[in-house]
Amino acid sequence: MYEKTTQASSARPAMRAAVGLLGVMLSAFSAFDARAQQPAKTATTQQHDSAAGADSARRAMAAMPGMAAAMPGMAPEPLGVSMERMGSGTSWIPDTVPLPSVHFMAGQWDLMLHGFVFAQYDKQGGSRGQSQPGSLNWGMFMASHELAGGRFQARTMLSLDPWTVTPGGYPLLLQTGESFHGAPLHDRQHPHDFWMELGALYEKAVTKRLGIEAYVAPSGEPALGPVAFMHRPSAMDNPFAPIGHHWQDATHIAFGVVTAGLFTHDWKLEGSVFNGREPDANRWDFDPIKLDSYSGRVLYNPNKNWALSASYGFLKSPEALVPTESVHRATASAIYGTTLGADGQVATTAIWGANKLSTQTGLAHAALLESEAILDSSNTLLGRAEYVQKSAEDLVLEAPQFSFAPDRRFNVSSLSLGYIREVARVRGATFGLGAMGTLNMVPSALESAYGSRTPLGGVVFVRLRPVRPAGGMAGMHMDHMASNSHPTGNHS
Image 1 (cartoon, rainbow, N blue to C red):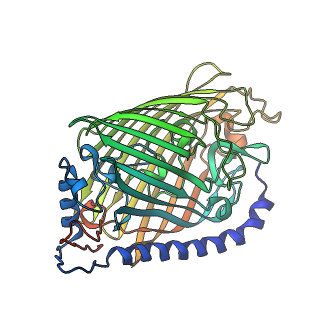
Image 2: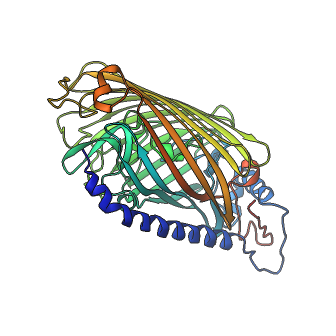
Image 3: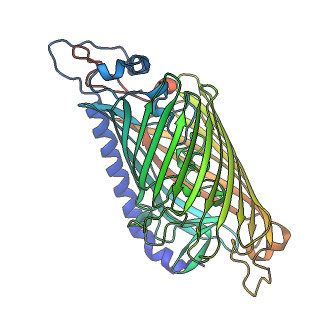
C-alpha cells in the first residue's frame, strides 16, 4: 500500500504547488484573453457585435472550397469539421458542447489554450481509504495553420500532477492500474505524466466528401477508446478519473503513436500503431518510444448533438510488473450534448469497455454513465455511475490474508454526485468552489478488506478553468479575416 508517511511528507509542498499553479494558469488565461481582445490597427477597421458573429463568419467562409486559402491567417476546416469538435487525440465530441477555451489569431496561426486546475482535499473512507490534499491539473496549447490546402495542428498538453499530487497519485477507492516503487497501485489513481501529449495532426479534404488525417506523437493518444475523461464535456469539471479508466480510456498517454484515417463530415475511420506499455513511475521524462500495439476506431457524429464511437485494440505488455501479459480491449461510447439557455449546457456520456487478458479466460467488463449540467453561469451539477469487474490481482487482494485466487473477479461499483458554484471571474477564467461525494459498493467477500460493503469517499475543491462563452460557441478572436476586415470579440 502507498505509505501514509510519504503522503503526509508531500502534503505541504503539494499545497504550495497548487497555489502557485493556480496563479500561473490564471496569468496565462488572462494574458491570452487580453491578447485575444486587442484589435489589430489598420487603415480600415470593421467592428463586429460579438465573438459569435465573427466565429460564424469564419466557419462559413472556411467551409467554402478555396476560401480559407484566400484569406490570410485562417486555417481551413476540412469538410466543415471544426477544431472545436476535437476531443482528446483524434476523437470527436458533439459540436454543440465544445470545451471552454481561449482562441485568437497571431499572424497566420490559429492559437488555442485550455486547461483546468483543481486544488482539492480528498478523503476516502474504509480500511483502504486515505486522505490527501493536492492539485490535479493540465493545460493544453494548440497552434493551427494552413498547409498544402489542409489544416496542420501542433499541440502539447502538460501536467504537474507528479509534483502536485505526489508520484504515487491520489486516494481513490476501487481504482487500479499502473505501479509505483515496484508495486501495483490500488485504491489510488496514478498521476498523469508531465508530457501528456506532444504531437502533430494533419487533415485535408481530398474530394468534396472525403478527407484524410495523419497524427504523429512522441506522446499522445491512439485511436482506441472513448474521449479521455478530462476532455469529455460530461466530465470536464469532475476532478477524479473513472474507476473503469483502465478498461476504457487509459491509453490517452502512450509514448509513441502513429495514426492514419479517412473521414467525411459525419464519419471517421482510423487506425493506429502505438506503444502499449503504460507510462513508468518516472513521470517527468519520455519513456522509450515503441510501436508494438495496434488499434482501430470508427467515429460517427450524426448531428451536432451526438458523438458515437467504437474501437478495438491489442496492447502488448501494458503493465511492467507483468511483462508477459497482453490485453485485447474493445470499447463503445455515446456522448450527447445540448445547450441550456444562454449560459448553460448538458452533456451525458455512456461507455462500455472490456479487457481480455492473455493470461486469463473471458472478458472483464466495465460500464459508465456520467453527466454534467451547467445550469447557468453560476451553478453546475455533475454525476457518475460505474460498474467494473476487477480481479483480486487488480485490487491487490491475492495476498495470503485474503486467500483469493489472483484471477477471481469481483463486481464493484460507485456512484458520485457533485456541485460547483462559480464564485469569481477574471479575464478569461472562472473560479468555482465544489464538492463531490462517492458511494462505493463491494460484494460481501470484500467487506473485510474495505471495512464496509459501502465505503464512502469525498472531495472538496477550488477549480479554475476558462470561461464558457455564451451560446456554447468557443470564443474566437481574430487579428484579421481579410486585408480590410478586423473583427474583435468579447468573452461573456
